[in-house]
Length: 330
Image 1 (cartoon, rainbow, N blue to C red):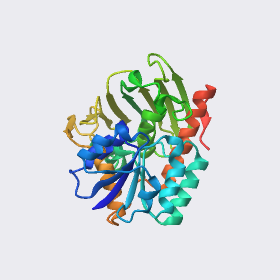
Image 2: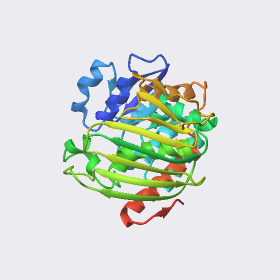
Image 3: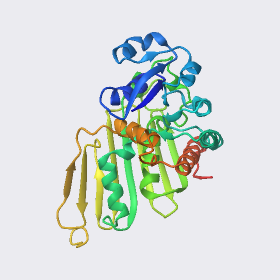
Image 4: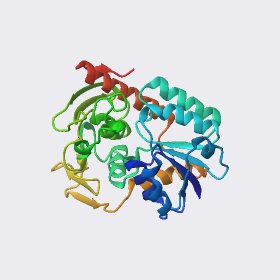
């Protein structure tokens, strides 16, 4: 059992804890630290988490094996370095960092310390996404042409003035930082590295944050992917991949995978397929994949090279949003 500390106990940090606490035989949270102690005291007491005011004391504690960071994005490099320097394994929220230089510095610290690193792109572990990935990799979808995705949440409509999430330095390109990075990573995973991006970012309804972001990526293999993100609507998540043998998709939520074959294509089969994956918790799956890597059972599936490339793509998307022009990925 990996004994972890949670750093950052806002809404998302608490979701991470609740995905595994008392439910996993691979990881449990034993300590915590957050900016506003009073907002987390009841939560930690109910879950038997030792809430501490001193992060350094947590990092020096031999009873803590790993640190999970749900902290503001600009702090990630420093936090990763501190944990790695203390010999703690590290699991960090997305985006990993906001620029490639910072990402490389954090990864160098992890490599030098010899600790395990995980990043919370937890949707990679969802069986509906895995089903799409498998059908791409084994050729059942045929030749890919394009991909489309959307993700939405009403969270931008109720962000408080004191929230760090309304700071454009922490959340550049609006909905891209909180939501779009998941779709970006999904299509890097499914379609390969990205050559060029274009982004449009607007504020339509949310009072304090840019709430609507659209970005298109041209992958190095010629496939294009387009994603739309909204912080001002009902919760939804969909991914659709178009191949010469048919369409593989998960729509409205990740609960259901669907395959629609091209009529008359023998390789595709003649009947649509539906697979129900209701009830799967990707947050738990991501944290348990990290715990398995810490235990030496399996490497964490998102490599340092993919992390750096993802940050480079993220940087290019932010720059495109600022300039209104397509941007090559460095």
